[in-house]
Image (cartoon, rainbow, N blue to C red; front, side, top):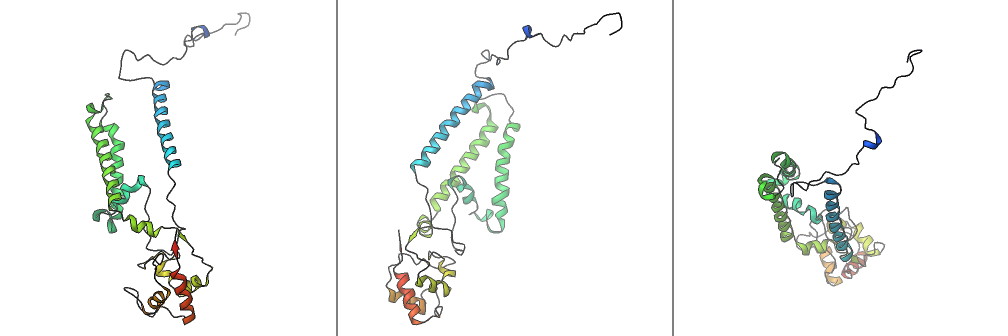
Length: 255
């Protein structure tokens, strides 16, 4: 502004006046049916609806079926075989094979899953076609079908080959184990817990002592003289302690 010249205003033609501004409507894709659609609200609404259906179904299953609770965790039970949830069973089965277990555990736990999920992540970059039909996107479809087939097969193998009877026994909730009882204190003092576990369910090669149905005399004889893989001479207590221990073990029952 110069003295005596008045004030001059400069306008920018790139900025639209309020009366010329148009509302932000999604683009009309009616000319290209089946090719694409507006992300909001068309695509996002479909995703929300599908997600809601699966969420309601999953919640219904959790309400209808009680969780298979097991006994309290026993850190001294070295023979316990944990079983992962169903969505990790395929990885659990993979670790049973010779090429993915023992000294090759890294291969089964890291290398093979890493390659599989890496292939799925690379699928959109390998097959960059605009088509939405699975038949016209062979690479992405092949990757997905192979992954689904592998997951289903490994999950089925894990369920079919698992020893469910042994798993039921090792995780069984036991009723009547009173750890304050004199018999349990003798059981613990004699070191029986190292082979048979803190819940008497068996560990480190020791057999379970629940629901055996053996009379007290037989239990006392096994504790003193051994049986099978159990050597003799392990019990070093008095005859009175042996009697209390045998009566305690002979009365143990599961639910």
